[in-house]
Image (cartoon, rainbow, N blue to C red):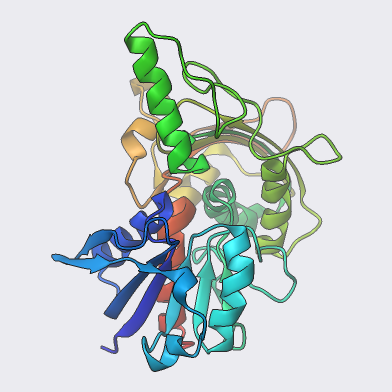
Amino acid sequence: MKKYNVAIVGATGAVGVEMVKMIEIRDFPVENLYLFASGRTAGKKIKFKNKEITVEDITAIKDFSVLKSKYGLDMALFSAGGSVSKDLAPKFAAQGVFVIDNSSAFRMEKDIPLIVPEVNPDAVRKDTKIIANPNCSTIQMVVALKPLHDAAKIKRVIVSTYQAVSGAGGRALDEFANQVMSWSKGEPIPEPVKLPHRIAFNVIPQIDVFVDNGYTKEEMKMVNETRKIFSDDTIKISSFCVRVPVLRGHSEAVWIETQEKLTVQDAKDILENAEGIVLMDDPASGKYPMPINTSESQTTYVGRIREDISTENGIVMWIVSDNLLKGAALNAVQIAELLISKKIL
């Protein structure tokens, strides 16, 4: 089997660390793995396949021809933030390196594919060197919705999210931990810095900044990205995104209205046989997905499926997935695998 030279840019961040793990766990065909981050964390060592790789300073690269001449890179997985991606991803792509970018920088660019491999694998193209990884909350939702959309055409989606603190990054996790620790010691709870309000023992009905229509950027990402992934601007979508005091794993309550009637059993049968989905739906026995039992799983879990009693042709469901894995690192690695399986790389 051919092996590939791979870089991870942003390797010391929460998602970058998971990218390294996913490449190893999924036995991705790596010849050489190169890890890059900012000067602040360059020099750190990260374990990969029983050896330690030293993180290099991405800002030290001035002549990007070294990406081929020195590193021989075939692909790079980016999780270093939108501004870094905007600056560096085109420079990597100009050297013939395929870039899979986890930021929001390129998601809505017309000529850049936005990919979830279980949903729209045919959208990848050989002539496009930059591929966008969707938002974490979007990914798990479309994985569950696509087989239902194929079966009965979804007309409308209403979604309310319950998103883990890790979705806001490592500094938000530290902030959460410090708040809980201070509370447990009877000490004053520190004021928030990364998040807009205290997250310990609280929920925050805001993720990202507000836009002119009163929604947040996170909420509009779910609307616009879902339509792009499905190649269908006619789907009506409304979202409400909330940060909750959970370490890892996003949960979503989703209402859908379909053109064709789907019974509850129809929906269960479809999802039970869908790629990337585990059906966990026995509420009478207390069996339904929760972040506590889906953390570090590569699967998207669906449960609490029932008819929407407020409308015809309506189904309600509960979707839970690990936001750092399927919502970010895993999906990026699966895109890389897709490039290989389609002989694009």
